[in-house]
Image (cartoon, rainbow, N blue to C red):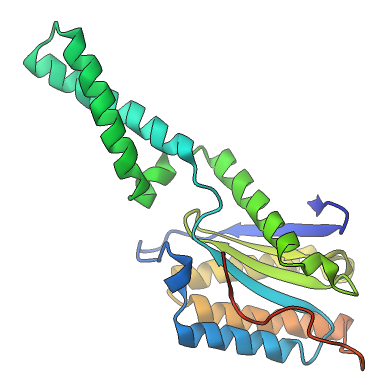
Length: 232
């Protein structure tokens, strides 16, 4: 998919759910030591190439308010119907009051249970909003501004369990899209296996080798972007 005026392409892979222990908080997804390890890997890559690499982690790509409404409506109405049938089968008021009260309660509770919240979000909408958030991050972080159009963003959205790789025009004109797709897929497997930081570091290194081959560092190159892990 080509984006906007810069001509970036977005490629992605679903991150498997794994054993359910994956954090939903971007701030704590990587330890301080892992953040430094990733930052060092980005720095090393940018010593060899004119390409710019960034890593970004966000809690979620959207608040998905409709999931709370849908969960509250379905769960609240179902439970209210069961309660009404058991206690007062002919009472419309008990059913309505129960539906409203339980709907509000379970809508609120759904927000605190990510797997349940995700269950009430249609997959196409979830995927579309992650894509939109990733594209926005690419532009917000200035990766489209690099001199040779060689910005790369590794974007991880925790709630949706998705990792996307975005690359600017200069890169995908030289590097096969399947190789970029492979980075995203392998990071997904690494997260499932509990080796998120290590796998991202490895993929940054491999991406750096490809970038160095096609976009070697120049005498007047400067580090155009921060090497730190971006927390969204």
